[in-house]
Amino acid sequence: MIFHMPESGRLLAPAKINLHLHVTEMLDDGRHALDTSFVYVDVYDVLTLRLSKEITVECNIDALSGHKNLVFQVLFALQKKYQVNQGLHVKIEKNLPHEAGLGGGSSDAASALLAANVLWDLHLTTEALIAFATPFGADIPCFLFGQASLAKGVGEDLSVYPESLPNGYICLAKPKKGLSTRDVFHQFDRSQDFLLTKQKPGDKVRPASRAYTPIGSNDLEGSAATLLPMISSVLSNMRLSSKQAWMSGSGSTCIGLCSSKLEATQLADHLQHEGLVSWTHVGQLLKTHPSFV
Image (cartoon, rainbow, N blue to C red; front, side):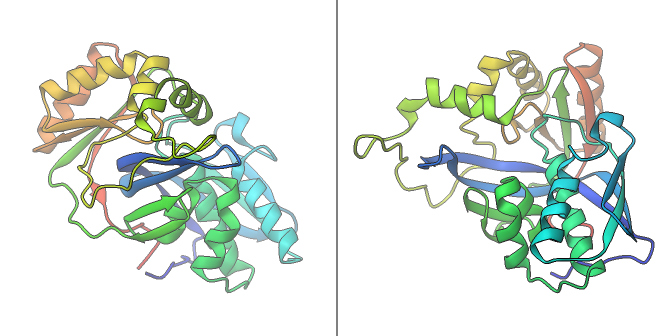
């Protein structure tokens, strides 16, 4: 897959969901190794980029403009690492919700890095971009990869997802509150140690992953629901009127796999009417990132 930079400078930064997520190890630095799968969804933030003297980030949500945005942080670090004498002006139209398990900020950062690699004539390989970006966020590599993927490690060890994507439409539904990834993993560490086999003092390692991991399996779901019980309510409602339902990433967005667009739309309307969620999207899964050909 090859990244395509349009002349307009306008890029779609898609959401992702996890088809499955297993925690396989706690690393010495406190991070967690995963066995997971990523696929894109047809709902997007929109980035418009152009060369400028400095790096500036403007967002339709004022609190996400400027130096605190992950886009600014990754671009500033890239500029410094490769001694680039140009800047970028980045305008972000934010449509993806925050603390939702959809990778919105990571997707924006990945799109900005892909664009900078072209506009600054860096010619970095995908592997080099992933190695650079991984310390800034475990979800960024899956967007740089450009295809639905299996991932291990902290998200940097990627391979092409080998199976067909689930058929049908999906309903994404985010409860009124979000969840911090850090808080969910802390809850997992406190309450779900029985899922991990301790090999020696200090180790927390899961036995080797199964050859086939069923879609919808997410080790973090119980911990997230403990912190935000509304997740259980959303999933219970979804399971009554969809083929399958599960949580994406560390939450709080839940996914309902439906047979038709009408079924998915009716599910979204029901969840909104019951006051269980603040954001929904009815759409389809994408095996390829929209900026890759």
